[in-house]
Length: 93
Image (cartoon, rainbow, N blue to C red; front, top):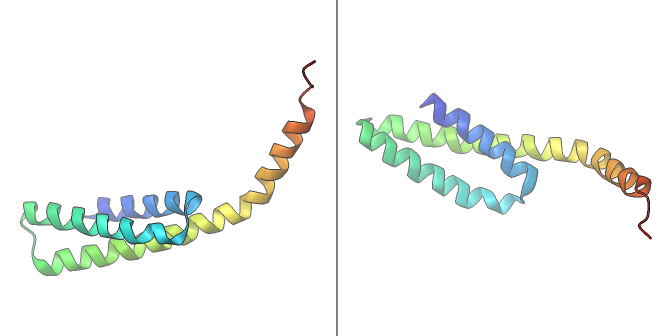
C-alpha cells in the first residue's frame, strides 16, 4: 500500500501544477474507489483500508499544496522567459 501513497502524492503535485482546488474532490473519490477495490481483492481488513484511504487523501492534498507552491514560485520566472523568447524572435516579412 506504500506504492499507492507515493502515487497519490505525485498525483497531488501534478494536479497542483495545473488545476484549481476543486479538482481534489473527484481525485479523492477516485483514489478512495481504487484503494477500496484493490484492498478487497487482496483480502485486507477494513481498518487497513480505512487507514490507507485516509493516508492517500491526506497525501494527495499535501502534494497539491506542494505543487501550488512550486507553481507560484516558478511562474514569474517562466513568464519572464516566455516574454524574452517572444521578443528575441525575428519578425517574418
